[in-house]
Length: 242
Length: 391
Image (tube, rainbow over all chains, first blue to last red; front, top):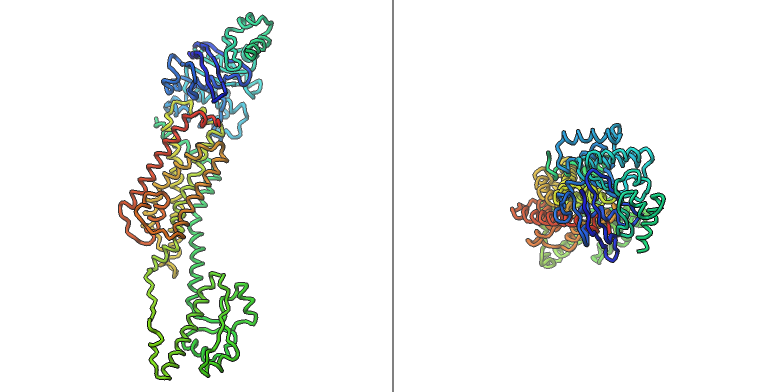
């Protein structure tokens, strides 16, 4: 479970995040929806303990992100905005490195890689170096790396960026399975359809603040629009004006 | 289960070795450096010695100076007639020095007048100076002999004109001459760890950020200290390996020359190698850490590369400055990195016996600086502007 309360972050004079509060429960998919530059990535980085908030607090499973960052990192798997792989290592070696960094033993890592490779349709690629991989293939390896330790909380920053339809569908399936397994899934996106197809809860962020929060139906009702895309434009536009 | 530090260490080593072309180039270059340098230097030096060793003069107009020719013959000096276009050849560097005898030489010499001779040379060419000096020395000896004979003929003691008799006693042993010549080996011992640790230091800091793998890496629970220490140990391993290979190359090359005349000036064998490695490996710990620290500030791989090459330039200046400033060995130098290594290593080559402090002090300073750099990198990785590259 991820909880965020009145989170704010300034970089000098730039206010990347002004006021973000939400709660992402276990066994549900929560989306941070907003246009580019809304502060989604910075919010996820604060939860991932890589950026210290200027105000407010974030916690994962009740653990404060500033007070005990190492415990938080252990309970989260993050697919960050930056998702580079080691090009000279094989896919398996890339994933294994993260398993080892998280203190898993060899057998547990091997079992985890087998399971994830099956889930992500990655098996045939495992022992190839990643430098020749397509964007979709790289993304699969990065997701496997994120999930190798079977974290109870998963954060994905714009996971479908640059992926083709097949890979996107495959990824959606993986995310649904995470929900079925009782994980807390938080992902950010600026793509409406993706969010509506997948998410239980939507948090609309614009200009660093939460402008609306709820299920897709609630947001439709709140905005008085017929479809979610109009609702998004309307609601995030309110944020812009504010 | 391995410790996080070991996990990082082995991953970095594997990653670096996978870059076959770079790794091969670095290793091969370091093995070849020693032999190539020594062979070139040995050729140059033995060339100088040969030029001076054979007593030979070139003369133009030898027939006008029978007395001088007689003197040369008595002293086993070969006389070679200079070609007609000797001035041109000297200018082109194909002749070193020519003694030119004017037509009236013999006439004036026999009459007891001052007879004039010319030595024609081009002193802008360093490699002809032994031949020039030799010609001068021979003519001075001829002068002294003729003068002495004239004084004796007039019943004057020749000692009158020579109140001080100068005798040359060169105290430099062949080994010490070699150390002067081999000031280059300490320089390579200082530069090779910089070369060896460079790729890994850049790749594991600025490179890690540039390829977008730093942020995911920092999202794992590994302690920043272990992460940086593992990377540093990998860079140190590479730096030490390259330094050891380079120095071994020098030993092998020196041994290939063992049969030759210059062997005495090239005393760099296994015992010296062991001493060099004992001094260079701790030094490599420092250079690897320092490279990582400055690369962490590099906003891109390329920028980091530029910083690292500045570091190598600065380090390579130190031995040259020592050579030209005539800095005398002093204890305080043991505490100054690079200067300390340069001093201690050249003392090894001179055959001096090193004290324990000569080993421990430079290495202690190197390790302390390495620890400081590693701690600084670990602290920098907590900073948002470093991790995400903000200005």
